[in-house]
Image (cartoon, rainbow, N blue to C red; front, side, top):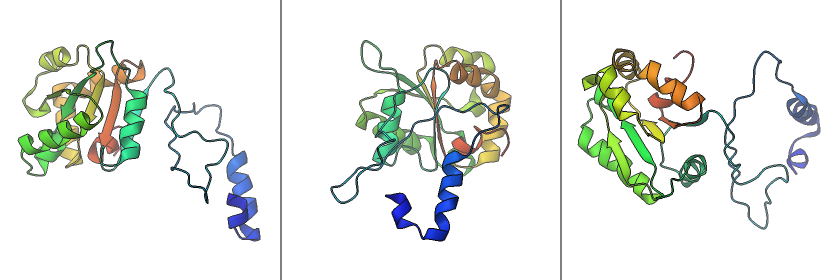
Length: 194
């Protein structure tokens, strides 16, 4: 269907993209594939599913706007391992927004409401700027999701270093113990460099 929509001179480009191979030195990064809702006029391609099951290992949801879109909310629900009680523990990091002059209370309430919409009510706010590595380590005990909000990327990155976040959280994500959700600045700091 996609080929039919492309001019004939663009079809070789589509074939090249489909056949592209990743160099063996670069492992594939597991991610969630979200297909658009299909309509009768526009069916979803057969090789895509609306939401793939999470794979073992790292679980991340990298967004530009957090949980503002229903597709992002569905993707997070698919990534979260629901506990027997059904309420995953979320650690909310507001520091990037603080770096832009935002108030913590309204930011936290907005995110907590988004989590409540997907059935998660155990959300804790931790400001990295006021947290020691020891205190952060305690807060991370039993956490299922770390949500890092949008705002000033450099401010966030500074407090990630001083609080020990950049040493404590990656092992949790890489081992599959916690889902990392980044919104804008929270997504940018998840990469190797800004």
